[in-house]
Length: 172
Image (cartoon, rainbow, N blue to C red; front, side, top):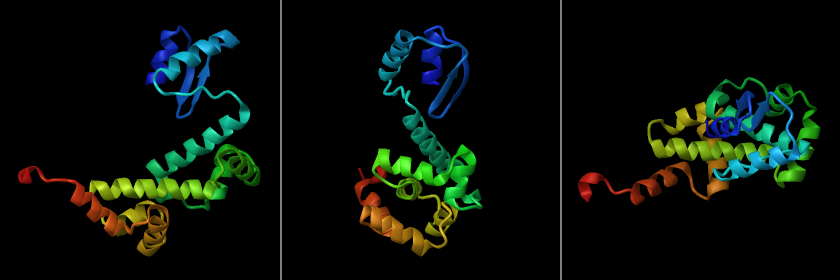
């Protein structure tokens, strides 16, 4: 919403605004691009204009959308999913991502899944088994192993730490 509003406030007509991507109705000059960049930076957004960075951002946006909205529905391997959705050869995408980000797509994806698991554990509405299913893990043990590798804690210990940090309102 912020990106859409700021660009429209500058007088530009938008074709579409999606996670990580904006398409304008008209071509813009370098000066206009700089103006948009400065306005978006006030809100913590970054204007990405080179092709490599755009591809990296598309990969990240695709993976974030997968984790947030449809991870449990993933019925193919991750490399095929990315290649199919971005219409590029996966090995080229993988090499570019690793070169620019310093981490493989798979490790980035695992980090996203663990962050989502942490969020779901904090909400305390789902069991670990339900979280594992939701995040497309083969088992709770698999989730626990990856969680511990990334955080240093088991999901159960992470949940206990959260409870220790929080003081219930009736105990204040």
